[in-house]
Length: 239
Image (tube, rainbow, N blue to C red):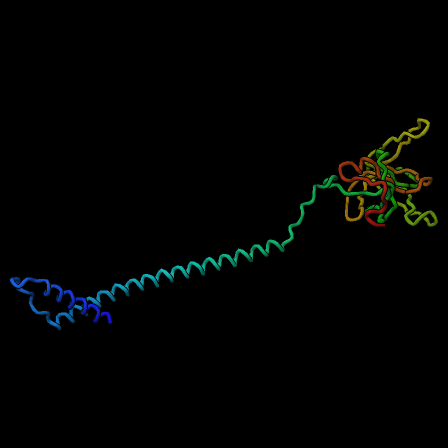
């Protein structure tokens, strides 16, 4: 079809030229059909080649565009997945720092184990008392290897059963002011205590506490810098 249209156009141009020429002008040489056909074929081939190159460039651009779209779709899907994960993840709230820091809590009464006596005692935690005291009976001072020692009885099984006798080195003596301005001189021993999971060391002065409710008392020297007392509670660390 393309060849036919091109041939008709060329013939028309030639015909026009022949009709407008004057009788005195010599006309062009006759058109060779084979040469015309070859020229048309060459022109068609060149035009088709141009069209093919254009189609190839278009296909390459379309391929690049499709690749870019696929990459964007992949990134969008990944972003949606991350957003969904972030929406379902619970961020833990940061708790405010404890008002008592690294100190542990004690109730007004706690169960305290004394390692040297291998026994536990219901103990009064008393911020009003300065030192700590243990109920001891039949206190007897003696000397061993040139050092002061003490022998004493403790009612580890209660008042209804016989006491257990212990001996310990005296680390010092302390004077406790009693009612009526009477000073009570007491021997002091060193002891290892355990309250729940907490272990500590402290000094205990020995005195008869049979008239008091609790055989062991822990005072401010023990509590200071390590514990806070909540007097509204008892046996926070278990009986």
